[in-house]
Image (tube, rainbow, N blue to C red):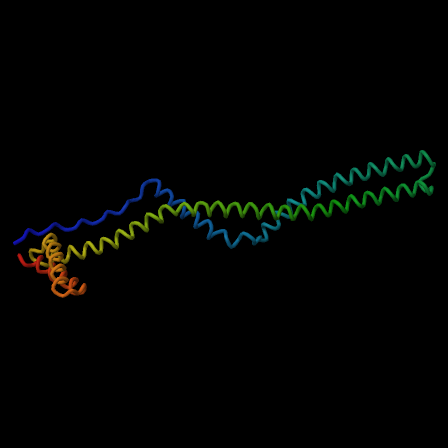
Length: 220
């Protein structure tokens, strides 16, 4: 009886290193961050809108207060000049100057309101950009999962190859005296004989199979 060949050893899967474990953790955090934020990027809640509007109002109110002080000071100085020059504030030249200055100041006030609207748009865009940057950060973290993923794929392939190895081990163990060396020798001899006697490659295949079986089991 031939000595039974040892079992074919199984492939060993690669275990996580500390670096890969960290990469998995970062990828998981990135994935969760994307899930939590991607559908909220362009949606401003009521508290967020109120916060943005309050920020804009604070700046506008300060600018408006500065305008009021400047306007009062300018108009008082103009009234003093008109009175000193004409002895009255109702003279035509004095009234004309006052009207022109009022028109100029009204334009400045209108510019303040326009700038307020522009600043609100800017505040919204800045908030959107911060959100996009945050989402991009989570996406970069998620990409750290590429290395663990490749490791998982490689280990999955090893598990499939181990299925084949386990099958051949089980096959060998189910036959008394099965010897892989005898099997290989018998297969080569059977294939050669099958081809020479039939001239048919299929005959060679069959001969190889049965020759292998004969070689493997003949000494049982």
